Length: 399
Ligand code: AMP
Image (cartoon, rainbow, N blue to C red; front, side):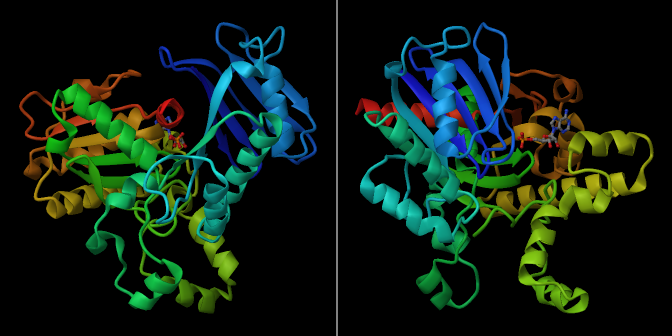
């Protein structure tokens, strides 16, 4: 079965075409700058040269039309007809409390996703545009939605509620939702497989550290606690996001700097984190390079980043009475041996022992980086959210 996976942002659309008979990627690509003067389309058809086009794409509808044309193109295509696509799976960031699992798109599901716009004003509307665009261009193809929040719906009240008036939860559903759920879910399953143990028997901490970063406590295969909250701002220090801070900093800064709500929101989401402390970049590669050249601010940013992650791992180990497995994934987690080393350095007290040579290895495969004697196994597991979306879509369409 051929499945198209879509991840729509406000001005972008990423896609991957899967052949589920062997879970191979037939083609992938992205449309960027949708609705702007010149949109850029990058298309990578398996076994053929990459295609790059600059054209005017007015909206997501136009973007989907463009993707279909490329996938079925005589030269750059991988399909004879779009009829070969049997289902489309979409990534949707916020499923609120309504969606505990992936689901097929129905009129009711669409109404509910629209109702949740309030909780994810930047992310859910583009996903909805993607769904409508597929409906217009491929009206008979079933669609599925896979939510970033769904995996975390297993959290108990003591971890998902904030200690603020209960009326705010009842009226506005203010609570911890968590994000990157597909990634935490995927890497925990991969790690259990690698360990040869049932997922249900393990206590894990998964660290998804990329541009955005979150850390999850997984107890018996289910999310027990996670560092992102009502929005993806809470928790770990990130590229440009602050992560945890004293909430009183918000009114204090607004007052002192005469900032508006939207300015302070932008400061915490776009001008904080690694970028703000290093004054160099939000990219961990540039931070580590500058650090090697002796830049003190870069070193401070690195130390804050790794310390804050280590604190979370310790907190989650306390929350679950110890852990069996620690997992690193996403851009930084998969590629930065220096970050993994610094995070694990002071965790020997809880049975974490890194193997220096294994940690330094580079590979695209899931692998152990702890010593054979380490009480807690530490793994690097490359994440693959698109594959999980394709798998969920396949399961839903097959049923
Ligand atoms: P992601 O959001 O998962 O795509 O992660 C992107 C981030 O991964 C980039 O912004 C970099 O900070 C980080 N990254 C990628 N490669 C490396 C590397 N070799 N060393 C350190 N950080 C890296």
